[in-house]
Amino acid sequence: MTLVREIMTSEVACVLDTASSSAAAIMMRDMNVGALPVITEDRTLIGIITDRDIVLNGVARELPTTTPVGELGTLAVYSVKADDPVSAATDAMREFQVRRLPVLENNKLVGIIAQADIARNLPSQETGDVVEQVSASEGSTR
Image 1 (tube, rainbow, N blue to C red):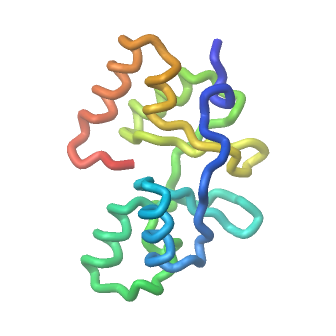
Image 2: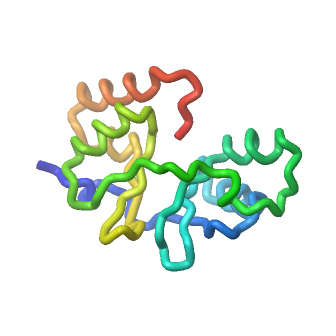
Image 3: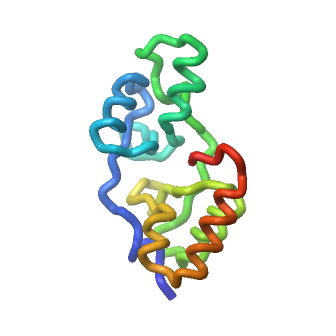
């Protein structure tokens, strides 16, 4: 049985909940990513911010670019534990229609697992099933 910790990305860039939406957007651009976990100073995960969140919850509402990401992101975050089996991550992705999940250990962020991690490490049929079921929800970007 493969554990989440074995295939997750452990070096995850994060953004503090107090950082501005423009700072988060610049980080995403520079790192070529579409989402960043939102943490407090002690690395407690409180949410996730996506490029879509910045556009729809910030720009489209004409909020200043200095608006803290903690006010724009999704504060209800689905996560898995580092010692969970990968099947727990795929089940959560299917159930909650998300493409990436923060990975926690002792309630602190230690990594992230994405569909791409699963695709590289699971049999192709199972990977296809996960991608199909997660992508079934129109507009799913998380």
